[in-house]
Length: 145
Figure 1 (cartoon, rainbow, N blue to C red):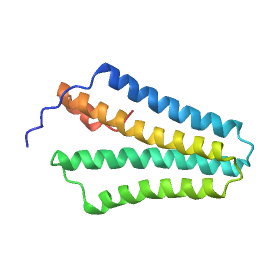
Figure 2 (figure 1 turned 30 degrees about the vertical axis):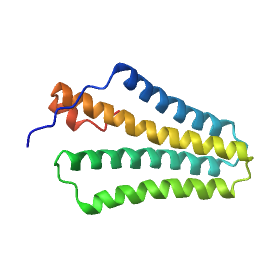
Figure 3 (figure 1 turned 180 degrees about the vertical axis):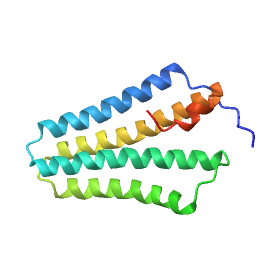
Figure 4 (figure 1 turned 90 degrees about the vertical axis):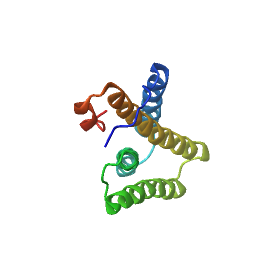
């Protein structure tokens, strides 16, 4: 199947995507480091960030694979959606029950969502650049940041 022609992402968009990923993730992690909460709570929120990032990238890759005619099973595709939903719901439940101020809860929610969005954008850029440059090896590594 022929590979569709993809425009190479601009350097500004690539840079903005990486910056958003770094800012969102670092803000979230610095907030966790400075938070006055038990270590197990910090571990919960750290695990949610990692799980959310992985599920968002996996979903984006699955959507892109399907668009390019690559086989993605319905079960895996569904699991990607469910995983992303679970990560977001678990964050909402955790923040709802946390003894944090509303501004802290909003901070964690926004940093989390920024990180998820940026991870998808970075992965898309990696894949678009690999397609544009015709790099088959890079396509296989397209989920490696």
